[in-house]
Length: 432
Image (cartoon, rainbow, N blue to C red):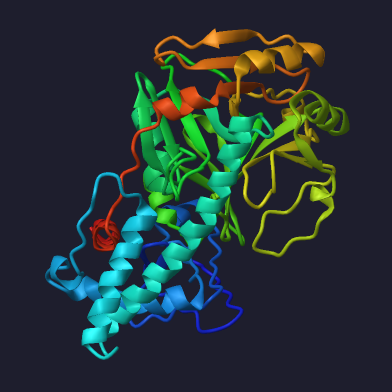
């Protein structure tokens, strides 16, 4: 296979496959590969893509150093004895648990006079995670308060129709690293973390996959863009049913059922960057979303220059958001420029958290848009929604916030040791 690696600093060598540890990529000590801070790869043919290990990039230096040391765990016969035991209370969230683990590690370091290299590495890893969770906790706290008091909304998930739920879940989870957060009948919700706005690591945008074996709809009217923090495993994408159609600096992928996916490497609060939808008149659609749905428009989005490792901005596109673009998933209104795009229509809906859907119905009617449906959705235990279909663009489903939280499962929390063990197991599975 032909690959080209670029590094802005450090050394990049790409002779073997990477191993995921946490959100970083490190090597077993026997491998000898050194990972630079900006390593990239180019995959040039479909046959090469199917077997390509992919490309990798390390994260911040502190996290990278910690993970490099913890990589030695791959050679350990047992991981359970290497981490201090921390009692997990059912009521504790991930931030409390990580703080407890850090306290135990600091105790270990004190006893070793700060000479325990593994404990030092774990300390760095825990401190990095805690900092990220503290930042995210502030975001979900103010977002939750805004939704509850009616001062803001939150773009929460997209609804996709799929032929085979199992095959679709396999692609989004094994191929792109999402997790199944909850299920409902013939539906599964996948995301990069908890959806709830009550968890320190929550507020993650989800995909609601709805199985319909007889569907024949065209799914080319939109695309999904992700910013993965460290890497995309090309072999996993191929093995989970994805078809990589472009791989220079960033990736374009066709998912099962024909959905289009764009992946680049960057750190975001939520890796789910945006949902792109093709429209005939971007300016008119943007004004409509502003006036009727109360979204903010970034009209300069399509004109901004980006680096070679980010997806090229589409001239004339406008980014619509509820809140800061770097913290929230957005809707990108993209001008139709080809004959294929001209005939495409949106085949998805996007859910928006709202204080009260009955009040929302009144606001929509006052703005000149009568919702297609307002009331309880069957099979949800009473979740109330209001479906708004604009003249052009993607339909929005406003969801009662209290009903949404009622449907949320308690987030599963792994200890730091269990988290590393899970990634080590995944790495071993890749080797088989």
